[in-house]
Image (cartoon, rainbow, N blue to C red; front, top):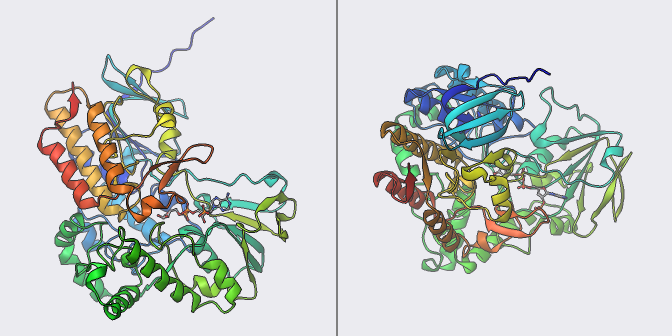
Length: 540
Ligand code: NA7
């Protein structure tokens, strides 16, 4: 019998997994360093979340001019943003422009998933296997797989019997879905669900919203941008970038928030109205300096937002269903909305409260809850993601001595500054657990900081003639301890009901994914490692 020989793997310096916001910039940086790079992308095109999340109403919640790369003045000069909060098609076009401007497309292999990555200690290289059966050998691997890319679906019993269409918002068909006149059910009412619901309600025949936990959403102010707006920000790029890197969450505001207790009751209300009127994520922690840590300030802000929501809903019983009462504003991701609450004043929209009337299952004609049957033509899941670890765990990663990252993380998820894991040399990650980029950051700012740090670390290893870099066990332990100390005592740490906290397969709460020390402190820690030639890391 003839034994089939595998072709010798292609060899490159670095394999990057994912061609979204992080992966594209990582590709650019390493190419600029003169390294050979192969970027592998599961989708047929670039964009990451902005490729996959093409559902009706998809829009970024970071306001202009903060959702764009800051590294290139040329990109700033060329960008022709149309709205303060750009919608998905505009953002997708922007990434295409960036990719083409810097000639990155030829470095990307599309429609290909990385299935396995195995550290080969003797060679000090990663052997990477794709679902197309190809193998690539690389000195370094960078997982730019996205923290919110592996969709979660509810697995309601009987779904396979449903005669209509079922689709997840982050796997929305490229050709679109005709919802006109249809009976549509949306499951999930967080950032994504809110955008879908407010957008499709006027088009569909009937919309049934299946809500488990109500959210506090802030009214978005989204004016069209003028040429003057664009011209005014172009010269501010470098200054804004530096200030954004020194901020808490990657946005720059023109004042320092006061402490709650330093204001009189009248001043507090005036301050909140002022911040509310901005119609942005500034409402989330931007009103009071101790907004994330003071229970009194959090309770005050929560009551203020409840009042804003109630004023917009005609039926008081529906308002009761939509207004959160059992957790504080800001302890979960704050969605922005445009007419979401008024949607529930429409005759063709029904709110189903799944906490009181849980889903029993799905049959041929629709969803059945303990309240009865809801006949549907389309079921839309806006049910979120296996956050932080999902896309990384989808790859069978074997580090030193054959250890499995998936199995290690099933016991306990740990990282060093969210970018490396002890036992996995020359493996880097962006948007992974325990960094601001995991959850609490305006993404381009955090992405650039992480990608720059990774590029410098790789450059250091290569230039120094080293073979490998990985954090020591002690460094990792110290980071995890610091993460827990700064993150758990916050209002986010105290609310376990959100994707900001990792969960075991059977739903038990685990580590807080979101690092809450702020991006300024985080960057200082990262820079200190670099400036000390990676003290606390093992270089071999
Ligand atoms: P999220 O924020 O994880 O929200 C998922 C929503 O789906 C939320 O309302 C969930 O209710 C609901 N959900 C999830 N599973 C179920 C089941 N089994 N039954 C009913 N309802 C369910 O995802 P998004 O896509 O909205 O946003 C993710 C991030 O993307 C967002 O924060 C932005 O940063 C961009 P729950 O609250 O868990 O009760």
